[in-house]
Image (tube, rainbow, N blue to C red):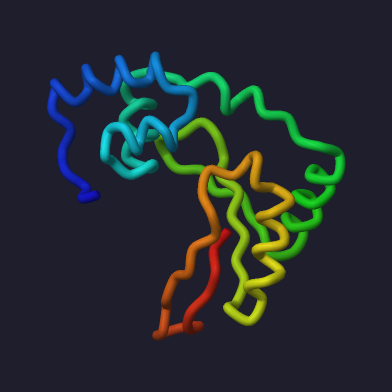
Length: 128
């Protein structure tokens, strides 16, 4: 999926797909676009997928989020987004630990943990 400009025709299709689908990942797959691209365009057009807001978390998940925010986690918010994004960074040596966290929080995550490379500074690391 390349990051190409949106045409008026694609924006119209996005509006129709948003009505039919129940999650941003499904919309992105249908549109053959990245999740981030679909979320940004939908936000700019004032479109919403309502089911993701209705997700509830267990008391244990809430405790895990609080604990992670006090340690390896952080909240990021972009200029044109109203909702923060939870991010958790770990070294590759802690992959099992991050996957354990993901398994517990999977129902509220939009994507699986990813490996990023920054060889100039820290080397490879995981982002969840």
